[in-house]
Image 1 (tube, one colour):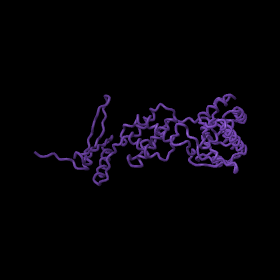
Image 2 (cartoon, helix red, strand yellow):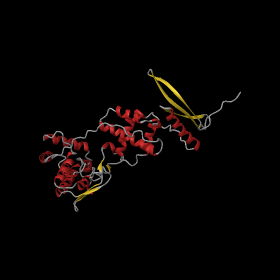
Image 3 (cartoon, one colour):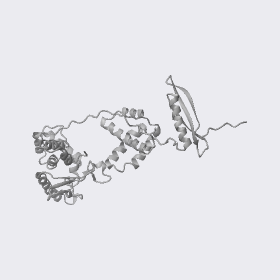
Image 4 (cartoon, one colour):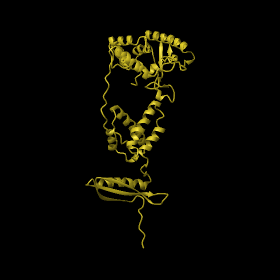
Length: 357
């Protein structure tokens, strides 16, 4: 009895197929190509290609057959999207800040893997990513962040040639509503300064208003960064939020670069007052005092003043003078507005504020 012939590597077939789904018939073309043999079992390894037309499938088959015969064919990756996301988060996020890494990992764990983790990386398609985006019941900003994490991970996979191109490219994202910027006018600024007088923000608020620094930068300011003789302040770090302090109390500035500003003389006088006031609090706290990093703005025992505490105290002060929607961050916009009104050019102002561009 004659033995059946086994297809050699590079051999393939094309056939027309019809399937019924939900009571409706669909017709497509399928090609199967023998790409080699499994070294463990000796069985043929085949790859299938599908398409709407015979011509489309034949072109895919011919391209793959040429690759097999020339020894350049690479089998599709069995890696799943979830496995790749874990690898990417572990090995390719070394250049981001700890807080950013934590946020990315949270998105992977809570949104990306539950929806797409089981899909093979090579099988992920643009419409699948779009469906994922459309199905997220989150704010537009949170949807965009989840998409950003997925896009960056897939972009690296494409760069490493695990996939031919990024299937997340070109997705439609929800419109991001920009929060209205609310700089304070002169009367509002004066009212806020009066409202914080005698409280924990008595010097923090005016310093924020007169320098335009981010609140996290001022809360992370240390006495070693204040040069009273030269009249300068070096902004080279920011205070990390409590949940992001596993690697330390400080983070680098938002744009990754330090800057030195020369504030008004009144700012330096406020800092001198804060230093004297801090010395008095240290005497009262005695052995309970703890400020090993030399923070300028602290709680009564020398511990860091977390931003949520500063935000809460500011909202209370602002509401007491009728500014219910005022935010600490608005002081930064107020500084920028006043600087422009007084003739400071955009490039100089950008440097003072520490903008990336």
